Structure formats: C-alpha cells, structure tokens
Length: 315
Image 1 (cartoon, rainbow, N blue to C red):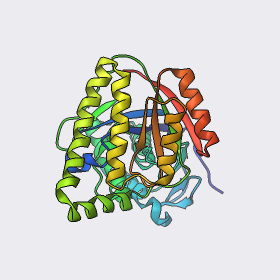
Image 2: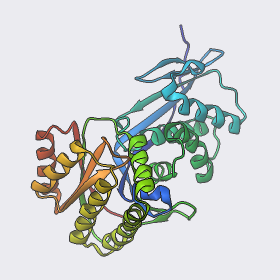
Image 3: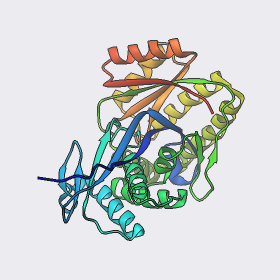
C-alpha cells in the first residue's frame, strides 16, 4: 500500500506547432513555431512513504529506475532537475497525463519534460528561470531526437508564436490579424530519422540543389513572418504551399501526408503543408475563417485523419 500526502502540486505545458522552417532550422535557418494549447500535459507531484520515486503514466507505472527505454529522456530530466534542487530521487510519485499524441510532431516529449520540471520546482517552492527550464527540458529532447534544435522546448514553453534560429535569441512574432488554422493527425508516428537521412542523402548526391531547397525554406520563413505581421492571409497560404513543395522535394513528406494536404486544399484551405519531422505525423492548413476551418477539419476526418484540431492564431 502506498500512502500519499494530501498536498499535490501540478505543473503543465502545451503542445507546439511548427508553421514553417522544420528541417531547415537544423541547418541554421529560421523557423516559426506556435503554441498549441488544444493539447496539453499535466504533471502532478505528491510525497509518498517510499524509498524510491514512482512514475504513474498511461505507458508505465512503477519506480523511476525501471522506466522503459522510450522514457529514458524523462528519467534523465527528472534526475537532473532533482540534482539542481539538491533533492533525492525518492519519496515522490509523479503522475503524467497528456492529450498530445506521441511522435506526431506536436512536441509531446518537450511538453512532458517542461511540465515535470515546473511541477518539481513548484513542489519544492523554488523559483524557476526560463534558462533553467529550457536547459533541463532539453535533456529529454536530446534522448528523444539525438541533436535537437531546441525549437520544441522553446515553443512548448511559450504562450506566444516564436521566431527561432539556432544561436540567436528567441523573438516573438507579430500577428497582424487573426489567422485560422487546422491541424490533422495522419494517425502514424512520424519518422524524423528517415526524413533527416533523406536530406543528408540528397545532399551527398546533389549538394547544390539540396542547399538551394534549404535556403528557400529559410526565405519562406522570412516571408511568412512578414505575412503574419501584415495580416496577409493569401501570401501566408502561398508560402505554406511552397514550403510543402520544398519538403516533398527533400523527401520529408510521404503519400499519407500528401493526401491530407490535397484534401485540405480541395476543401478550401488557402495553403497546407506537413508540420514537424515528416514521414507521418501531422499537417497544418490555413482557412479564411473559423467556419471554413471547421469544414476543412470535417473533410480531413472523412479522409481518415485520426484527429483534427482547429483554432484561431492571435498575438
């Protein structure tokens, strides 16, 4: 029998959405990412009369040392956070609840790490700086993605759209008018490693054209920032379509993603593209208004999208 304390402290985070710039961000180009508050993670911490730390999640329930391999990033994040706090990894139970689908490019691993760090700091009554949060959450991302750019943790910890470029300060993105976005889940886990390998392979075979595509994706991000600031819906839609073309050329998209992109466009989307690592995962589409966004979401679900979300992007 586990005896829990009555005091529970909760830390939370939300999903993220890369609007433009995925993959090219790894090569130093800028990207725009958005918070996706329609999906979230909650981490609750309670004390327990036990000499270990217990994890309670939908994928695993048990002591921290026995976490399955796919959760080793979270284990490292918890251990390092407790080390920062100068507290032992024992006498606690951490419960994880998430509505973010795994492996779909919506920032699940980053959001879980952020929620865990926030909950542990709050439990021990310690003030958490943004720098500490990003550094500690980055540990989980490193386990999940190998050499992450940092955009997931930055976006999942922000309440505003961000301009992200490796080695540069993160900036907010101005939104000149409401934009209506639809996200659709293919139902398949994205294969980021295969997508990254595809770009590297193309770079070896045809380095000039590959670099040109990466450069163009960077230019699309620059233009998308202007479109958002000026409220230019048509331009942003065209840029989303152009980004999809470049990502397809680089081998990042696949038949399932292309199908949903085409369904969204046929249903009235001004523009649509994959979002995240590719080779599975999700797409994002731009609508004229909320009613159109809902109609596009319905069309995508009829086309076998596993799940859809639609929302208004404002500053």
